[in-house]
Every structure is written in structure tokens, then in C-alpha cells.
Length: 257
Length: 257
Image (cartoon, rainbow over all chains, first blue to last red; front, side):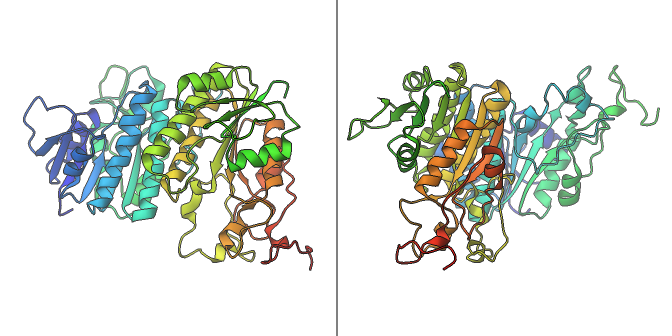
């Protein structure tokens, strides 16, 4: 990647995981919604994804976009996700193709498929002896309006890829937590994404060759109901973490202990 | 269906096809965007799908909804489809589940999958000796922003079905023309939907039992790249027309002539 990578939503948890892990590996242009508390180590701007001028300024001169910005709350109200997530993502794609950006990595979400977790399937599907597995080829089943907005972001990516040729990778991000997996939360353990694996899969999405992809972004957990095979095969994703390697006391345990 | 059926977008072409074909078979409550030129034969109101009060008034007392309203133009600009089609459909679902409506038939569109028609596949896929076939289980590939809005309407239906239990049938409507198929337009012949088949498939969607469906709404054309098998199997759709039974002079020809 010769040109800078635009990272929107740089102040959020996913943005921080990316910058901590691969901040030195790329030239970045960060976009914050609010002025950052500390002066960033990289070029940055402050702006809103629903403001066309901000978005146009953001994509200027970049070769790729990692688009994380939006309302991140699973319980976000419709008006917010309609504007910030759906309209904001559309504006970002529009500006990106206009500016000749070649690659767009979109932060989709496990919530785009949350309604697969039916009463009948849970909690068994969260356990390692259950064989229920989603692989990204299934039609979305959002569990909330935030999930509807993320599924729509994927559809927008499909349109901009087909119409303008921009390469698009949608990463359905699992449960990102720093340091160790969620405790006493089987679902979160099944879809855990460690900080370093989060950085790793985004690096892979910046470096790999593909046309349009939908992959799951989780660590290599023993428990899982999202396949990471496609991310391995197409992106070269090589996860280092597994929620089973932690016990309830937050201590790392040996894999075979 | 004991209670009236709300038909939104009643003044449009699909609404007219439905009313001409099955206007006497159900009790209707029509919703028009603009006052109708002639006094309708059924109860009606004039309102806008993006106005909550209008939508709440519309669903009051109805047992089912056929939701056709929205900007119908394939070339409609984003702001219009974002508001009228995406937000409007969300408001209609929200009001419908709040009012206890049991069944929601959504006018999706061939444009939700228009980008499957790549340069490499066309025009061969429009012809009867080609075996390319979409069946509704594929992920959307919209060919325009109108198609993005229709794919999003399907996702909204999935969410409202999963979350609230309302039965949802998405009909990806083909090329509806009165009297005869489009002339000198292979694509339109392949996805032709006659007026009576349009009325028929909507009657089936009102009468059949299902949970959540995505079906193609086209006549039984010799040329076709949309499967109607699911509509036949689940809805009992029994199409009467076939674009191959018309010649270029608009005259009906014998099937085996």
C-alpha cells in the first residue's frame, strides 16, 4: 500500500486495536468524530461521515479505506443508524470511488446475523461440541436495527464493487475485548476477537487480493459458530488467540492444560 | 383474511394490477400518496409513508399489508430511496407490528439482484437456452441505489419477522406491463410479469402460510433467469402467462405455433 490508509472511527475500540497492532506498518490518515484527547501519531482530521465535505476531505489522497465510523451501539435507535451508519457508509463509498480509492474494508458486525441465535439453538450453539456454523454466504438475519444497518452497509459495498470495481472486504466483527475474552459469557467467548487478531485481520484485508468478500472477524476460538475459513483462505488471516486458552480468573492457561 | 388488507402505493402500476385482478376478492384499505383522480371503490386514505401519523392511521384495523409505496424509479437518487423506500418501509413495519398486523407482503424488485446481469452473462442469460437461474437464496447484488433500498427492505422484513413474528413475503417483482410483454427487449421478456399474474401472486401471498419468504414475481416465461419454483411451492402461485406466447406484433400466438 503506497498511499495512506484512511481509518474512520479511529477513536473507537476497533480503531485503537488496529493502531496498537499495526500502527507502524502503514501510513495512516485518521478520521475522528470528536477531537482526540491526545495528539495522534499520524495525520488526522476531525469530521462527520454524514457531512459530504468532511468525507471528501477524508478520502483525498488515500489508497484504501478502513471504515469503522458509525453509531456502534447494538441498541442504537433507528434514526441514528439510518443516518450515521447507512447514509454515512453510502457517503463514504461515494467519495471513495470518486477519489479513485482501490480498496474498502468495512466494519460489519456479528449483529448482522444475530437473529440466527434463536431460543432453540442457544446456548448450545455457543459451545464447542455444537456444529452450527455460519460462513458468510448466508442471508443476513439482524438481531437489532444496528444489525440492519450493518447488513445494509454490506449491500452498499456489493453495489459499489459491482458498479465501480472498488475491492470490498466486509468483516463481521465479533466481540472485541482487550487482554482476555469476556468472562461468564458464552456467546462472547464464542465470538471473541482479541486486539492482536483484530489488527491482524485488518492488515490481511489491506494486503490481500480479492474482489468482494464477507468474512467473520473472530479469534480461533474452540467455541465458535462463525467460520474463519474464508478469512484464512482469501485474506491469509492467521489468528493467534483462542478464548479457550483463558480461564475464568483472567489468567492465560496452557492450551492443553 | 377477515380484516381489510392495507395496500400502500395503491395508485402505482402494481397497485392497479392488483386491484384490477383481485379487487373484489378482499376487503381493501388503500393508501395513496396523492389524492386519486377518481373516487376509489374501496376505503382509502391519502398519506406519506415517512409520516408516522399517516402510517399509524393506515395500519389501524387491518390484518395484512401489501407494501408497494416508495420511489419506484430505478434511477431514483439516494436521498429519495433512503427516505421513501428505506425509512418508509421501516416505519410501515414498525406500525404494522405495533398494530398487530399478521402478514406483510413487500414489493421487492428485480433491481435488488440486477448486478448479476454482468457483461459476460448477457444477453445469453436472457435466453431460454441459458441455464443461469436465481432462486432467492442468493445474496443481493443491486444494480442501482433503488435496488440497494429494496434489498434493505428485505433485511428489514427479516428483522421484523425474527423479532416480532410477523409473517413476511418479499416478492421480487419483474417487468410488469399491461397486455403484452415488452417488445424488442429480451431482458424484459425474461422477467415479464403480466397484470393477472401480478394479481395472482399477491393473492397467493395473502392466502398462503409461511414465515419469511423471498420469491420472484414473474410470469411463467420460457425465457427466465429467476426461478418461480419457490413461489409455486410455498405460495401456490399458478402463473397463466408466458412472454413466449406473444410475437413481436403484440398478437397472442399459440403456445406451440
